Amino acid sequence: MFENVTKTKCKVKKENIKMKNVVFSILLLAVTTIFIGKSFAQEPQTIPEKEVPKKVIKNFKEKHPNITDAIWYPYPNRYYKKQEEIYKVYPILWTNNVPEFYEVRFADDKGKLRKVFDRKGTWKITSRSIAEADLPSGINSQLADAGYGTWEKVSLERTSKSGETVRFYKIWLRNKNRKRILFFNDSLKLVKTLKWDDDTNFVVEANAKLKNAPGFIKGKRSIAAEKVPETVTAAVKESYVDIEIIEWVEYKRVYDPFQSGPFGFSYYDIQLPNYYQVLMSDDTGKLKATYNHRGELLEVAEVIESKNLPKNVRQEMKREDYKMWTFEESHDKIEIGKDKYVYRIFGIINNEPALLILDEKGKNIEL
Image (cartoon, rainbow, N blue to C red; front, side, top):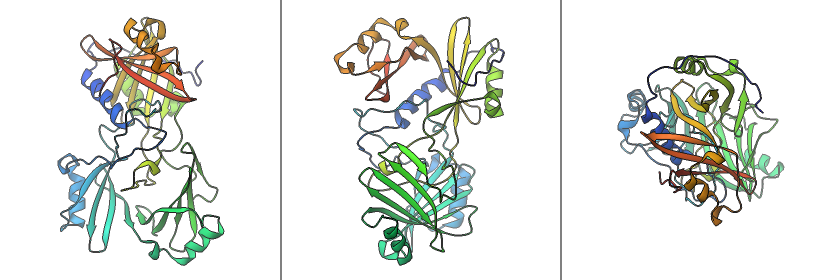
């Protein structure tokens, strides 16, 4: 049933896992779960400067001491979407409780621009919006020759990146459900093409400078234990023993940057960290534990079969609203407080993964 099965024995600590991590992780699911279908994206959610690491603020202000209109965002940006949209199934997304990157938007004497820093304050990306009149004619002619002449230019940027000696022209193009981000260097050579078709399939073209675009490999994949970061395996060994590890799963963030709304398309080709989930079993049943790449626990869930769900939950699943759903046989039971649980119910609708989060009374959770 499971690929890359690795069996390991480890030791269970006597102390209980702190449930505040679980509660916080469940809240994060509502904020960061990726949605599909028609976009109702709004502006990304800002964060106050006091929530940005001091090293980030220090390095920014040293470079831009006179800027007073800086607005900060965790990156990747967080958006709130309409509740009726069907969303894909992912565990708690990567490390949104402690963002790895921070984006700042502000204006200088040349106009509006953005910068991205990692949490240590290291500069990663600078992006400045440009007008179509500022796009070199050599790029426009290449776009026409490549068949992009009639495509909508959604956004145009001039970018620079840590570790690169040149700047780039970044061209966002769209033709119905076909979407591209093209990167041209200072010599006007096309060096990278990112491609989305029908909002689902991501491809890096053969001319890509980076063969694997970070953060866009779809969904989850089973991996061998030796490919799991040592920080994660150490955290599991510290907390569990006499547990059989059935499967390790790696998750990478998947999203469509063209759904970022009309006021601020955001996609930066920087490496986003993955997160990891381990499926375990003992005499009492199966557990899933989800960790970020630093080995910090995000969530623990008990795997529970459909027949063992509370009666009220099973009745909710039979409602007319879900007649088109095909429910999975296994679901997640998550403790959010003493003797309080929520249930993550997995299903399929229109050939797409979907889920419900229900309380013990079968009511949808408003997170």
